[in-house]
Length: 398
Image 1 (cartoon, rainbow, N blue to C red):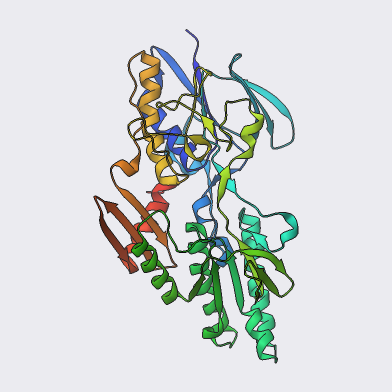
Image 2: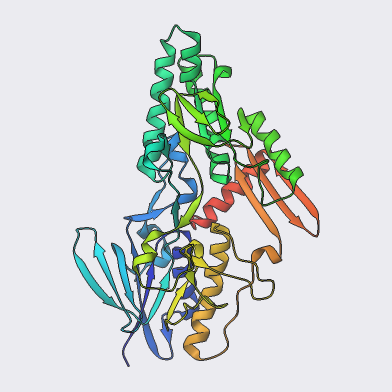
């Protein structure tokens, strides 16, 4: 009998966990047939997207070579971008890193291309935290502004150069603003500036932070951010980042040295060319076992898929933690399908426990867990340790 080929598109957190889960469940064989594994990703390694803000404040490397992982043994890695999926002919077309076009047959296909950072219109100014290069550019900009501030004699201009606006107050915006406040104060001290003159503004279009949890949890997060040196402005959006200031939705101008956009995620636009069934928002349509509708042998999980708990009708959020749980279940689903027996169905993590963790700089974290109306909040060093553990587990570093 011929070998089976399992292709996984996407080497982010969910793609890696899918590869590991399927490999461990199948153990190299299925119904007497060997399984060949291929991982396709446009990056040369696994990029820790959850830590994208880190290169914006320091020089941390967030790219991990595929060979770092023990389960990568025997896996073929292809650096490229999948351009279409022919579910009838069971083949994909992709463009490799050199721009060459090629095709590959598959028996099993996992689509885990995730999401990308939403960007504002190009004419709105500022810089969006979209990838490692943008993060490095952000770091160079605020550091250059602080160097200018060290030689500036005009107090108002010096204050402006020491200020930064973060537009978008989701978890990414919260983590970015908190880390910036910490690092900018350190840099200011090294330049002989007064660190208390650093101003980091987090602008939210909502009436409170952390809409995923109760109002009192959002208020507690606001308090912790204030202790970190971040000032949250509510019910206000950035309309335009102009030279020397941002224009706000209430008509005010806020003098800042730079504006960073962290306005959420959207499903990877690459999905729109693949020929798979999508929701109006651009997510892949799947059943309760992550099977893509009308495409035998094709599965999709993570941010790029619309995954709904059949018991409560609740859709999973675009979070790495939920994608990792999906990947663990996918391994069992694939094996069950190969053996022709009933497969486990999706169950949302929130049906067990609502759980969020947020990093606020080294030794500073915020963790919330909720069940049956009860709230658990952990801050400080323990909150940081839990957040770091989640980051490391997401990238399978431990």
